[in-house]
Structures are given as structure tokens and as C-alpha cells.
Length: 356
Image (cartoon, rainbow, N blue to C red; front, side, top):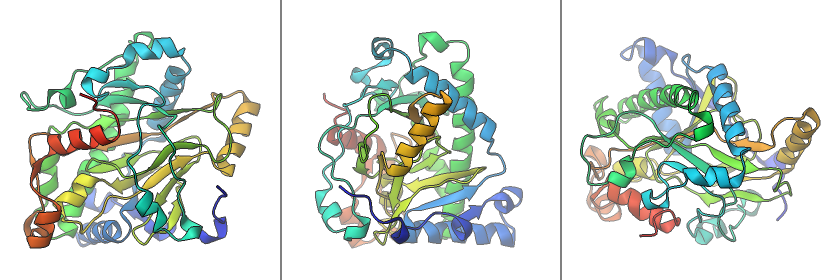
């Protein structure tokens, strides 16, 4: 499948970046409230946004990327020791060719040709590692979603510190944005923050092996939406992430230094009754990715693409349902009340991560 013309694509930059500094300094200030309205409006219109957060440290992100590159460089049999299918792969490693994207052929067919997606033909060739971030509930109906950590043996001394530091930073950004979305939607400021407390948040880096895969346009993560509340990304060292705005426009993602990309997930769509929708995206080896691979080869750098990703979740035992002004006959039928943990389990079954 040929690549869409770059001339017909937008880049998330400039005015689409929302600086949250004013809100962090004073949430009740005019500038802070204006930023809240911009965030809510941007998510309604596009399902994604980029924020500038003064707490973001590129050094912490680089330390995280460094340790994940070294992890993925390990032999396969070593990494397989960290795999736990009995826990729906919700902690530790998920091997390549395990996760299968949901069937979204109808949504792909509806896209304009210049913004088309690559149709997945099987399981994703990416690896993933899930590392718990934040507190978990003392008791839960969904223990698999709140399981103990997995620490790789070769990284016992530094793993927890590096992973938790970067994950906590990104989760703090999610918490702030969750507050800002609520304010922007005229809900009490702590509406979503309370729902996220003790959620099964996961630092969720993927690993794509460019020693094995380097052909354009190899699909690394097939066209999909995220099942959680908000997904947040730091910078990756290789391009390849494409997202679709709500109007169907396909956008190659470029995250500026000191910024983070956020995408709405299915749980945010659920509680807003579809006012904000979960955004679709894919990761492929594009021509730009191929050029970055060649540069990395020449420089003797690791040929693994690591995504700097965190999935934030509504707490497993909380009910998902359209809230306040978003609750009506139509939305309650389309988004019936369901525990967040049950919604996650159903989605995991669709993508082959929950098989029992």
C-alpha cells in the first residue's frame, strides 16, 4: 500500500499545542480556565492534543528509552521469562505476534483515499511491557488487572526507579489534563480525577524490532483505538505513529521537546456519551522511519523502536456510564452501565490478550 502524499497531511504543532502552565499555577485563573476550554474543545474536535507541561523532563524520558532499548535487545528466551498470559499480559512482557487488532475494516473503508489506513492482516509484530503506575485498590473484583509488578532479572537495581519516575511524571500530566477536561466540559473539577484514583494505570512501552522488520510499510501496530481513559506519549526515537482526527484526517505525529501527546480512549468516550470519541491510530514503518533506521545503523545505535506510552484507566470497580449532561436515552443505550474492569476484560478478549 502506497504512502499518502505528505502534502495532504497535517502536523500537530503550533496552535494545537496547549500549555498547561497557567492551570498548574492557578486553576481558577482566566488563563487556566481558557486552557481548560481549549483542551476540551480540541478533544471534542480531534480526539487528541499535545500539551506543554513544565514538569516534563526529556532527560527522564531518555533514561526510560535507554533502559527499554537494552531490555528489548535481550534474547527472546530471556524476555519470555517476564510473560504472564494467565494475567492477561497486564504486567510484564507481551511477545510479538500476540495482540491482534480489532476488526475495523468498516471504519477504514469509510476513510478518504488520501487518509486511508493500512488494513491489518494478523497479529502485531511488536513486543510490549506493562509496568504498574500509581496505587492499586486494597480489594478488587478484577485481580488480574491489578497484579503485582514484574521486574526483569537483568535490571533489578535500576528498573523500578527509572520506570516509576517516568511513569509517575506522565500520570501527573494525565491527572492535570483530566481535571482540565472536566472544567472545560462544565463538570466539577475532580469528576474524572476521582474515577482515575487507584486505576490500573500502565506504563506501556512497545518494542519494534528493526533488526527483523525494516520494510516499508510494515504494520507494527494495526489501526485501532485505545480501550482506556487517556493515553499519553512522550517522544520516541523513531517516527511511525499516525493518528486520525475526528474528521478522518490522517496525521503523522511529531511531539516537540518538552511536550506530550494525549489521545482519548474508549473510557473517556463512554463517560462523555460520545461527545469525545476514542481516536484511531496505527504505527508503521514509513519512508521516514526507514530513513531513521538507516541513520541509527550508521551511528551504531540500537535498532528497536520504543514507544514512550502510558495508559491511564478508570478504577476497575467503578461503573462506566455517560455522566451528567451527557446522559440521555440515546447515549445510555449506546454506552450502557458497565464496570470499568469488565469493559477492559471484554476489550482484552477482542484483541487476544484475555483467552480464558
